[in-house]
Image (cartoon, rainbow, N blue to C red; front, side, top):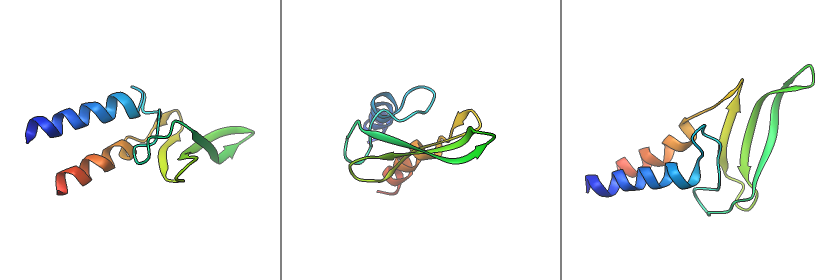
Length: 83
């Protein structure tokens, strides 16, 4: 069972998120159509952005001040641990 979970973690990190945390495709429906919406702008510069799947409208990522929030990719791992 541990090997399966380890493989799933690798698979999700490798195919759904880039190394910097930017979403490649939706982890729920698999769509590669990801929309970006600016949440906070300071002097016409994006400071915070949220990424959504264009098909299912679920959150796919959150970028703030130069870094992606890793909790978006961690949420699916927590759900796997609870099962």
